[in-house]
Length: 204
Image 1: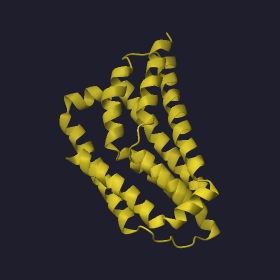
Image 2: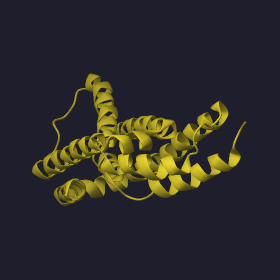
Image 3: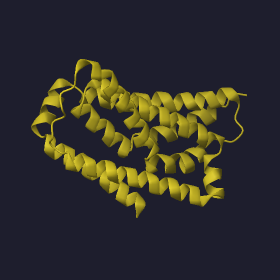
Image 4: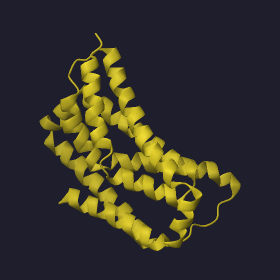
């Protein structure tokens, strides 16, 4: 039986969670202003793919798994925080450096790399893990019907794709990209510092 109330609850809970800035948001912002629109949207696709994975696991009982095996949650937290700190330090070190010009045939590879960056960033995002394991799991009732389950997953995909997609499209405008080039070093260091800080905060 389709549970519209449960789907609506998941919608509002997830909408509130996804718009709160975190590592995913910072990664989308930086990719949008520093790379091509196609690369920014590919990164968004990677993030959305992992959101679909986490939400499916949460509805299936991710919170119960972490409650039964707290060490698993700790391992995920440490690995995720370590990746965020590495990503942040890398951005700071490379701040202001212009990428090596790519040949036309390398464009497809850069889009694939951006997709994988979105996947890894979201997998390593402790905020996502904590949200899905605790808040999202509590909002999604157990033993839902197939149609309700599919609708909940659809909500996650549509909301996250719309939000991050709009951010990527808005910030990949040519005038914004030009403004970024003028302040490249400052913006890179700011984004790197934010991601590094989020990683350190999560680890400590």
